[in-house]
Structures are given as structure tokens and as C-alpha cells.
Amino acid sequence: MWHVIKIQINRERAAKEALIAYFGDEKKVYVPFTYKDKDSSKIKPLFPGYGFVDLVISMDGDSIGEINRVAHCNKLLRFGDHYPTVTDSYIEMLKSRESEGFHRTQYTHFREHETVRLKSEQWKHYNAVISKLRGSDRVDLLIDHLGKQMTMKNVHIKDIASID
Image (cartoon, rainbow, N blue to C red; front, side, top):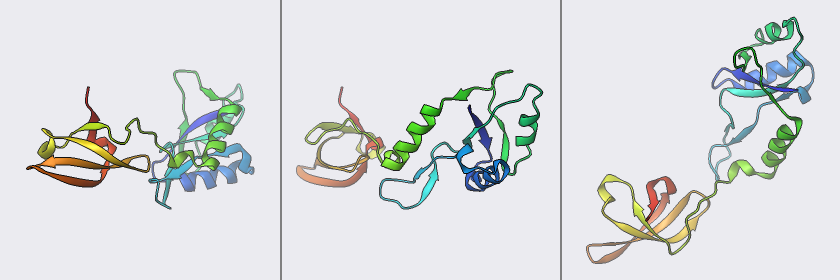
């Protein structure tokens, strides 16, 4: 069964290597990584501070104590006396989506020509029209400012909101 293991933040790669060395089997360790953003080649952990290990917990708890001694690993995630597990199918789904590029995809509900409201303090009284979707997390906006149409390019979707 796959268990969630807490890993020291920013040490996920080193922890992954230490876990592989501990188990002697790369297939028993999974620490998913993703890209920093859709256009980046830099990677980051998909779940910072966590990874997955395929292990059977013995009744005497020896496997738990041993894994706590692996470099950069804190402990198995647990709730009271329960160590939650993750199914093989969930791990396989994560691996397949990672290889397909799910980590580069964010979905936006915004559409071209939609009127939106700007969230920033200086523009909070303005509405804008989405003129172009740029990938999954950025848009170009047309805004009427002082009687002229202005274009705001590469606006992050967190900086706009739908008009209710």
C-alpha cells in the first residue's frame, strides 16, 4: 500500500534519492514534480513537503521507525493511530497525468470577449473585456480609460473577477 511521507521542504529531490537508496527499488518511491509555470523548464514538487512510499507497515511498527531515519524524511503521515493509504490506481493516475503534462495545465473559466472586473486597488472601479486568452492563466484586456481604449497585456487571472 502507498503511504504519504512527510519530507523536509525544499529537500524533496534529496529525500527521493535517499528513499530509493533505502528501499533499493525506484518503483517503491514516488515524489511527483511539476513545472513552476506553463512556460518554465524549472520544476518544483507537486505536493511540497510530501511524497509517497509503497510499504507494508508491520504490526510491531519497526518499518515506521526505520523510515523515520531516512535522510530528509520526517515521518509517515498519520491521523491518531491510523496511517492513511493511497491506492495504486491513484498513484498510476498521477504518474500518467504527470507524463501527459497535467502539471502545465490550469483551467480558466474566463472566455474571450467576456466582461470582467479588475481587482487591483488602482483599477478596482474599472471593468475590462478579455481580448485574448494567453495560455491557461493569463489574458489580454481592453479597458476604456479616459475615453480611450487601452490594452493591458499578460494580466494574471488572479487579478480579475467575473462580474456577477
